[in-house]
Length: 348
Image (cartoon, rainbow, N blue to C red; front, side):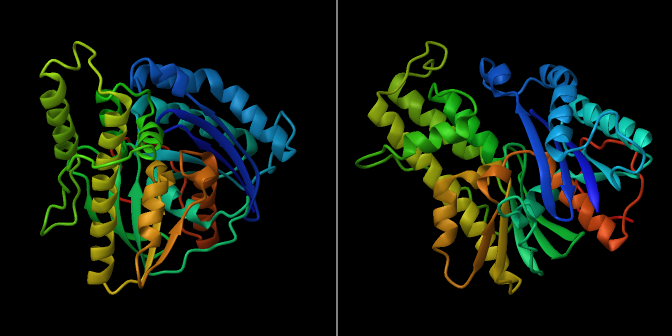
């Protein structure tokens, strides 16, 4: 089975060819430099960049996979794309590219949930989907735009137990980095700074929201802002006042500790309440070393992370989602994007 896939949900343009569970290619163009001066993703610029770069990314993926252009009828068994959740304009670029390819090749068009892709990315190892997930399990999807806990009973059989009520974890990392004067994307910058911290660190709250499996990171971000205002003055950001490097590192360490502890505790508590011993963690924030270390210290759980190469958005995970559906015979031709898609399970 050979699948051609497209990923354009946010600020990565990606195309991939998956054949028999082995990646023939996974080309990714990232827009980080484009959005860095704005300290975040600008949707209109992202859509235009996807449109501009798609021909080159697709061409690279096809070349790596040994597929000749123009594509011939039957050269792939299915064409897949992320139909949501994501930025509307960005999603449409992927949908149009995938639809054109499917029409040209005469293959079914399969739209998949981008967040399911982050979960199934845990199956990749050295370019092969050689680590099939064992169900049931608890899934933590933690990225720039989403933080969710799922009860996964099997492929396509997912129930959302909790999700963020405001800022996602990755979004909070980016916003705290911006407050501290660190470049975008903020997650890797905060992690690097936190590793430099020495001595006592300030204490920030753990937003555990007792009695619910939902998340809320906006208060933690605000606590950092109040701390900086107390140290530098209420107009610190407008005046571009910054902490000394040593103090900045300690703030990053304290914020990261609070975010990681919250993610690990809420996930492990949910797993225990359901009697589950397997946990899978996917999404861009799952590349964070402190998060991986904290989950690794949990006793009584088998925790699976995706390899770092597949943590950020990529078409390989989209192709794998489509392949699992094709294997199960549970797919339908998809024509619409769904920017607010919130149902991760399969529906036909």
